[in-house]
Amino acid sequence: MTVQQHQLANGFRIVTETMPGLQSAAIGVWVTAGGRNERIEQNGIAHFLEHMAFKGTKRRSALDIAEAIEDVGGYINAYTSREVTAYYARVLQEDVPLALDVVADIVLNPVFDPREIEIERGVILQEIGQALDTPDDVIFDWLQEESYHDQPIGRTILGPAERVRAFDRADLERFVGEHYGPGQMILSASGAVDHDVIVKMAEDLFGDLASKPLMMPKGATFTGGEARYEKALEQAHIALAFEGPGYRDDAIYTAQIYSSALGGGMSSRLFQEVREKRGLCYTIFAQTGAYADTGTLTLYAGTSGDQLDELAGITIDEMKRAACDMSDAEVDRARAQMKAGMLMGLESPTNRAERLARLVQIWDDVPPLADTVARIDAVTTADVRAMAEDMAHGASMALALYGPVGDAAPLAGLQERRAA
Image (cartoon, rainbow, N blue to C red; front, side, top):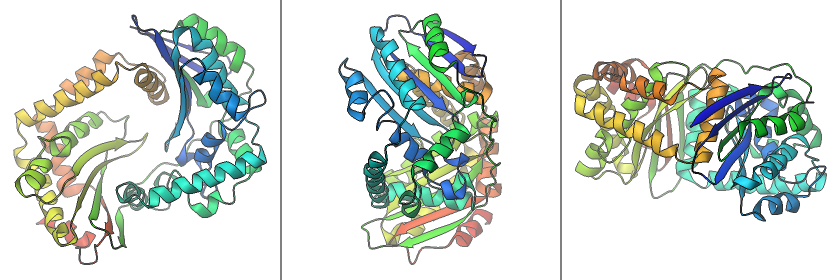
């Protein structure tokens, strides 16, 4: 497999990876502008803009966009994260030029028809309502807010309903004007693609874009805190966050192995101790999330209100125990899971295109896959135990509770248990 890169004169970046034997490809544009690039009055605008990309351009109606890709059996989609907004398509090899033309059209030429804005406003408000009705979804928004108080990175990606109700065409155009320059865009393609053909098309489609000043988001500071929302639900939901490394920090590999050993699968400590031995929950897991300058270890579980304190206490105890007796076998298993998950995922051209774009965003380069595997292999049991020690005793902490949680111990109580 061959990774190739190119940069146009205006700063627009292109990265491709040819995957021999495939008859399909994934191609898209990743814009380095997401939720954390919004000012407070813009909260939710990046996601709103992503929705509007499919509602018509200067050349195509909303139906034309959908039919152009689906008529050839392809798939088109988009997503918004806190640091990126992505627009991408999956098509057969012969339809790559069509897919790139459509993706470029929706990114560069949206018309923001006022009638379509009103229709999509209603769709997004329904999406917000759905999230609020999904406890194991909304609790992570509350946890993020507690982790990063009064910062763009701590705000919900969907935005509050009151702001979404107020956005208009000028707001959308303003955000595009501020953040959708060629230097903020990465064209990534993987699968049955020809690098030179992609570069030539990109030059034609994006080469005339005028450069814009890069507006760097404000640095993040993990604050910690507690959110508690009582509601008559069947389950009490708990989510914990601990400050961890960002994705430019080599410690990110240690953090990922640690979270996998702690709560990443059926053999993990939390799953075995909390679910299998004690039957306190159906779902419990730990995961690592990372941004440019910060990161979090997140733990989640759902249980009954009267068992919440027991579950939370055992979770803290298991974190403390991992600092003392995390074994070589556990680290080896977590390492194998991490490598297998990454390598299996990269059999998909869509996942490969996303990985390429992410690496170019982070490093402005694509390190060899073997380098990443070597970094994972270099993590030792001592490294993981040191990370576990920091998470159990030193790292800042945030807590979110939802459901029948009125009698649950506060954050201060869990902090005392960490210190005991």
